[in-house]
Image 1 (cartoon, rainbow, N blue to C red):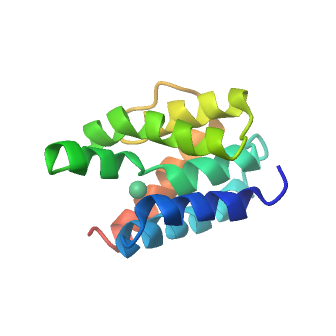
Image 2: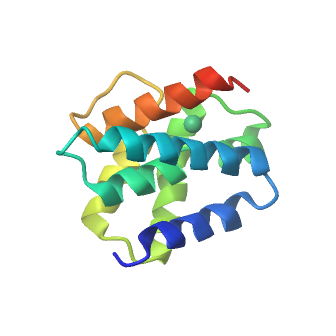
Length: 133
Ligand SMILES: [Fe+2]
């Protein structure tokens, strides 16, 4: 998709609004995912980009509904929230399904064999290790 990254960043900013902490985290994870992906030829760059930038969208839903978030609620609410954002920019439906599976599995043992899931998990761990907040 042309200008996919720009469209995803725009979606990310609109979604998280003034929540700079979430936006910064997503951008850092994307940065690491891009770097890691270079060593994994099986990765689809569009799936990596969408997964990295949108992987934590479930946090906002969880906090709105419950006043907290954890890995489990992120996985529960993230896929549907990401789906809405991806549909709005015309992301290919087959890839939306994969991104949803990745986001719904990024805090638990992998149920999927996607190279992109492994890259996202590693990128997220690197960023969370550096700044556990
Ligand atoms: Fe994250």
